[in-house]
Length: 252
Image 1 (tube, helix red, strand yellow):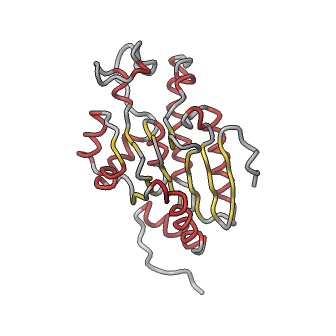
Image 2 (cartoon, rainbow, N blue to C red):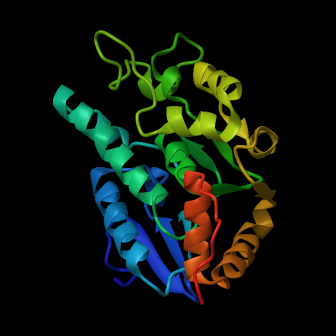
């Protein structure tokens, strides 16, 4: 496996059967770039084949954000054709993460918005810090004031001249699967950012840990899962994900 210095925008550290995968652009709120996508794809390919990894914890560096979605400096430069391809790149990357054999936990603190929340939704489940703020906010980028954010006051680079625009990295599929269609529609129609407590009530996150205990509690959870047999973790994940029945065990 590569060491923690092998990547430009992410940090990978493997300790005691836990792969700690950290988005490492804190000055940009860990916003996603093509380089990040390429590095994530490489990491999940490697982790999937590493028998020493039983669980992956995905998190963001710095105090402010898990991930603020797509880096606008990337988005603003895209041609119409490239805009189509970036959607496919994100969906393929997140699908690869979703299919990783072992459990993947998204440890979300601070902002997880737009593509950042879509990334978290591709994990097996999300644990939130009490300071987390989450939402699929794409629809607000072309909204009327006061709902349009300052960053798109002069127009939304992702809004086509004709036709509509919606979250393009799997969020419109995974959010309803997680919280139900009606609740998902409310969040998608309004582009609202919600706090950790409401996210817990909706079923978007599995649990909320106090911010001052977050790293410690995530470590304890990862340690417990990592203590399990890797083959059984892989089997259970596959059974649940694909709705299989486990009728006959392996012969001894």
